[in-house]
Length: 308
Length: 314
Image (cartoon, rainbow over all chains, first blue to last red; front, side, top):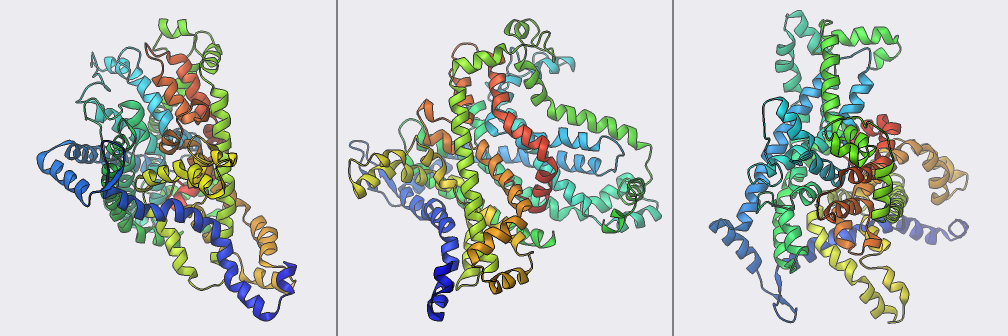
């Protein structure tokens, strides 16, 4: 610092003008190379194809996008992964939000005892990784030794479904595992939303003689709508990005039953013969979808933080 | 809530009881306890039975697959897991990978957040929104180009400083550098710490300047000590997400000796070709989740507050 205090006022001015950039440099370099540059390079990549012999990279224009478009028209693999991603979203988003709002309302009741313990049990999956979630549920779903089918026999389901190797059940199996892992996060956000509701509304409703259901239906849920909206966007984005559980539980199968958009990108880019151009075209489409969801949510993020 | 904090705990409970959806439903106390405990146990059950199963002997698992508690507690599964794959090596790899990521994310985020909250320079706000905007770029878009970038680093390094430069070999795939480098900066961290730095009084900066302290000294001797809470909260988030990383370590390592523990447990499952040994696998899973479970138990309040405040998981 001595060097700066000893410089002339002009040198000092120049230094203070660039000093900010020095502090930003590491962050800007890393984000530049690994976030911003890929926005361009993955688009360039999506316009290329590796020649079958010799491995030379050829510029093919929009061929990869045309191929995706054809697959949508003809109901090919890409159409399937769009469909699976959509079903996965339908499976995870309403289930996750529904359960978490219910639990948040229950947790908002000021219990005198044990409320820390309930929270501990309900929140704990937030620190479990997707790899561990995959391993745990692969075990729980196992038809021979898994607990889930064993417990199902108690409610008269015997034999239970062959979760991971049945085309009809594999996606549901992944959905349940992912809903489980994300539940803690959803409950925390929902609970914060429930606790933010001004108590005077409830007092007024009490005077009007509204019962518990009426209060939840006409006060809690409507006033929770900004939180619900936020949860919906975040959960849609998360559902479009789910990877680890699929990789461990089903590897995209059986057949193509759990081959979501993300999973298809990974398989095309890294499994067998790498089709990085084709995978990048898919990544670009997926990224635009996610970007759209993020933009919708972005304004919400600003106001949330301002608020708290 | 601030009006309630100075009253006694007992009053607080009864007062907020009348002020929630639950007003005047005292009977529901017991049924709610039962409901929440049941739901909580169901949610935590996969973790609980995994932990118990990891202490069951293999014969116990085969004889009583669905009992929750072990008939006899044993460390047999941990020994089997530890000896069949290099779990020790995986742990070391994950520890190095996570601590490098956490260290640099904290350091770089502090620096950037400081620039955004205390310094003035042209384009400051535009750059801040650019960094914030990077949060919207999904990993799915960046991971293929990043894989290519990192894989080509050794060759580019050699082209730059010579074929014989052995240091170049520590930059590509299957290296700690390759595992960590895309994550050394965090837009989330910059955002979070800037939010906190903005709450610090500007006078601090002025008086430090009058005392002759440069910005660097002011940052490390005044701002950082005052922000320990926010910095450690961010550190916890950074650690949790670094430790749990899956897709990047999966593609950037193909040598067993460089796998992180998340990838290690995946291959431990996949490599058992005939009949998976669930006991050792659960022991492995417990080893993988232990660090994050401990953090959860110790820092649950901070974690929950952080998520509720920012709406982000890190």
